Amino acid sequence: MLRVGLTGGIAAGKTTVARHLATLGAQIIDYDQIAHQLMSPTGVAVTQIQNAFGPHATDSTGGINRKWLSEEVFTDTSQRLKLNTIMHPLVYQVAAQMDESWTHSNKVVVHDIPLLADVYDTIPFHFAHILTVEAPTDIRISRMVNERHITRKQAVDRIASQAPRVRRECLSDVLIDSSVSIEQMFDNVDMIYNSLSQEAVQTHKEAMRTSK
Ligand SMILES: CC(C)(COP(=O)(O)OP(=O)(O)OC[C@H]1O[C@@H](n2cnc3c(N)ncnc32)[C@H](O)[C@@H]1O)[C@@H](O)C(=O)NCCC(=O)NCCS
Ligand SMILES: Nc1ncnc2c1ncn2[C@@H]1O[C@H](COP(=O)(O)OP(=O)(O)OP(=O)(O)O)[C@@H](O)[C@H]1O
Figure 1 (cartoon, helix red, strand yellow):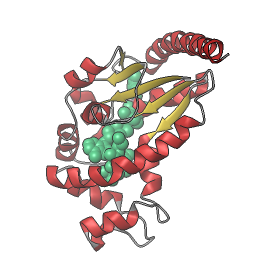
Figure 2 (cartoon, protein in one colour):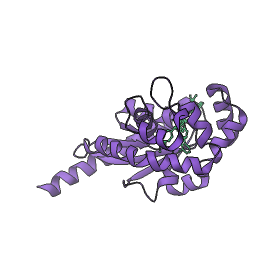
Figure 3 (cartoon, protein in one colour):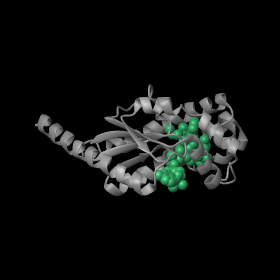
Figure 4 (tube, helix red, strand yellow):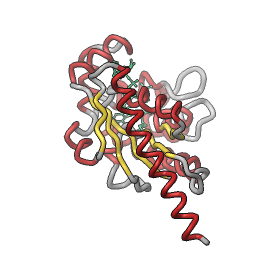
């Protein structure tokens, strides 16, 4: 397999790019989705979060009230660090299990990690390539305000809670511009995937050869 990291600023278009990569044949490990599962009523993070944040952290279903938690963590750095300390090791554990099942394949395995630039020094994976999806801040704020029904202040707080764009760009070897049309962006992603999948096949062949 060829392990690739996919990151980008909030509302830049990571999920859109990841879905397109999946249609081309990539295997996607979606860290937001893993976090949501861990916070669902049967999720293993629920008790730890409730102990750390109090009874308001859960809703009537017994799962984590993500809307309430968002307000806590996107306005207060110490609360965010507290959540990250609980969540990140649990998310990595699930991601590692998913990743392992593709080890001996010729697939492009994409870890979709919103916070890759923030956790780069501690995440227990090495990536052959890192792709970042970026758009100007004002576009990302408009997307959040129009589509997620949050205020401009909440959108600005969310952007401020993440590493700056320059840090993501320093770590990445491929930049995907999501301020162009979706069609143009997908054409660009098609070219990127073409090259990644050839490298994945090559890497797999070499691994087979050396294991003989
Ligand atoms: C804060 C939570 C409850 C908000 O839930 P909500 O459903 O509103 O948003 P969602 O999960 O879809 O995340 C949307 C985006 O917010 C940003 N974001 C999420 N968590 C964080 C965080 N801890 N710090 C900064 N930005 C974050 C990311 O860009 C993410 O793509 C949720 O994101 C969460 O559980 N975060 C902690 C787990 C985590 O670190 N996830 C990111 C994986 S690396
Ligand atoms: N090239 C593009 N042109 C126009 N709109 C786009 C483009 N790329 C993504 N979008 C739109 O931007 C919005 C945010 O995209 P998406 O949900 O993929 O972002 P994200 O980076 O995964 O967000 P988050 O960080 O919250 O998980 C969506 O409505 C999506 O359709």
